Image (cartoon, rainbow, N blue to C red; front, top):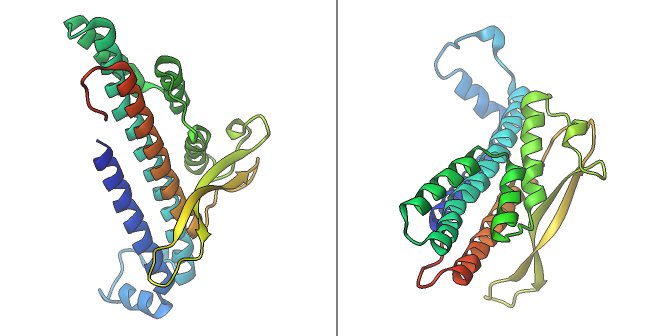
Length: 239
């Protein structure tokens, strides 16, 4: 489960890096060459010039990246929850049919729940707290703003401090690497804050940090689920 999630995340990271590199290198001449390669266009009056397409491509990349990150994190929550529910059920009911039915019902309820309710369930039922909970919830609000409000942050998206905040994970070097040696670093937070009326926007570098943040979230969740498994089951393996 963990391998599949992290493998999918790495593919998204690589694809984002590829698209960003392509955007950095593309020229207006290359774009025009592609535009005219078929000798005609489907609807010439709707054709967008090079600058318009650069802006459109970056906006689309932002939506896709935020959506992909959110979907991967929600998939992690959903997949790990059924594992947690099964452990709890076995501890309370053994291998009974009643216990399995309860697991299925609990999972169906979890799948339908909003993101914040999913985090509440993890805390209340399994004692699992997620460091990046607020950031994942903020990503949900960011997508909502982009899809429903032309990308503008609304009052309903703000926390008690009037902020829509994201704690993005980035690497801080601990020391300068010696010749031929790999650099040593640690993950630290880089906070991004939006307020009412701000447009949801992430720089290219911040989009990459979003994927690092998702990786940190999924890794923390995996470890928390593993600890729960060790504490509440006998002879069972981690997630």
